[in-house]
Image 1 (cartoon, helix red, strand yellow):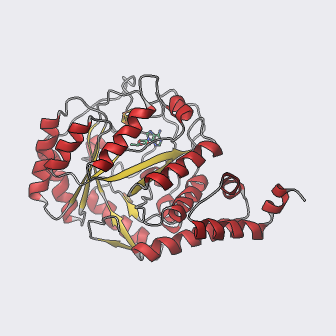
Image 2: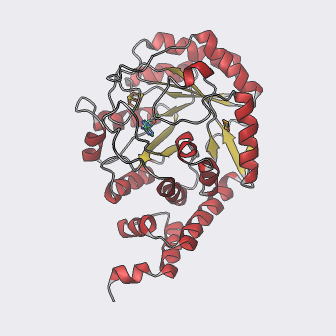
Image 3: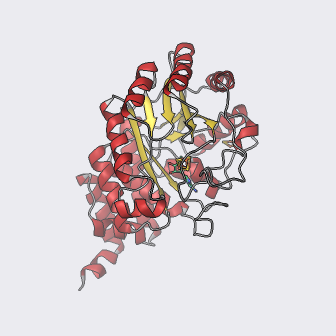
Length: 356
Ligand code: 5AD
Ligand code: SF4
Ligand code: FES
């Protein structure tokens, strides 16, 4: 009997799940099996284990992060992203500090205790401007966490922003495989610089978020295995995992998008490998399937990220096509999410939701 035959047995898939859970580690053939199996009960078993692990750390609570997309200008040209600088068809915008603070106030009213300030890599935001903005939010919302998601910057810039009051930083590593990084990005971008930024952020005392898309062009089981090894060794406090969504006016417009199914399996596997990680059920997941975020929670995710950006700007912040909630204000999204999370048997909570 060959190894592959042994591993195709359904009971063995469950044994692999148990094993990964106990060891907190996974081998390449195990990953391959968990991504390939079409045995529904085994996949459900994987998700159930991941839920159990998530609940042992965070209970049945789901945290909210209010997302403010404050500038759609970007100097980069990532091959997958609708905000890439070569996309001339996209009207660009910047929000004023006053509008951003208004978004925070609305979010606070709706129970957000974390604000995620996200933008493209926009050179307008010098350290001085960005620190002033962070400082104003820090002063007005002392009980809230401030998360930045503004891309690669020099270490000294990260330091200044940390000193100004930022607590957390999201910078997806995108892929832990150097060759794959080169498929996803133009030659002017550097895998080493990306990794350096993540280490700088960690050194400076940020809670750090890494992450990657599932089903991106050039991704293989081997590159995913590198992603999992990276997560196991770097142990980011947060990990953003969402499907790649093929988007107009990008080099990858004609590529197949990722799937909800693969994303859910990876969410569960990451939960087993890194039990304490804060894991969002991403908007991209909700954009590919009307119940994507609920399925994410049931696969071991414990964070949702409603959009606080002004409605007029949301469709302009077109990282990928088909984004949900484009015309729904935060009051509506808040009650929508409340219902959706309750339907999964979990509870949406008003809390900073720090890493435990
Ligand atoms: N589909 C899904 N996610 C995308 N991102 C960028 N472009 C896309 C796309 N087409 C993700 C990247 C980036 C984050 C802000 O959005 O992983 O880090
Ligand atoms: Fe710019 Fe980020 Fe999009 Fe890359 S993924 S083009 S850095 S907004
Ligand atoms: Fe925005 Fe449902 S979360 S409409």
